[in-house]
Image (tube, rainbow, N blue to C red; front, top):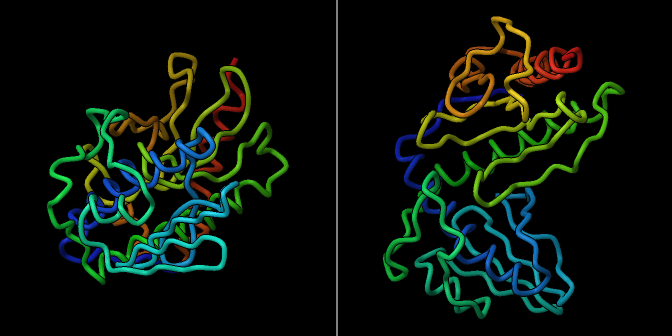
Length: 237
């Protein structure tokens, strides 16, 4: 697998789809089963099939709603229209300062075809990296791969106690604009000093996509980056 630079306008599409995930898809899932976890899916992301047989999915520039054998697919337009398709009022009660705010629910969301396709590829690539990390015997006390709607990235947690950390592939945010992989220790004060910990943003270490885009072995390089963080944390006293 290779990584290419994100297309022009990627951030605007990423933030629009983040808003859709946070303020429409998540509130509807919370109504059904009290959970907010999303998953990587072909073409983008969405929910698993829920207890009501409902599944919500972003597939490229389309919002797809499937339930009981019926499928509705529409181009993504506004938060209000997306909410109408799944019978939920867009809600910002879970808004946080470090994520895109809900804004005007009648505003047309910016969803570019190339940028949406890039986001889908990034989520798929990140999920493949995390799946490889989970195969290691050293990756103990692991969680499943989840896209949390506030962080909006495929991520896992590994190890226990003061060794525990989050590992993921962010599509970029307000701190690091480009996509990046990260290791975020839960007990940063217990982390032994090492050049690996570059302390970018809120994370302990970050590997930017621009460093992977020049590599012919981007998948292996990303896996090695996360493994290095895990192995350093495993020896915390």
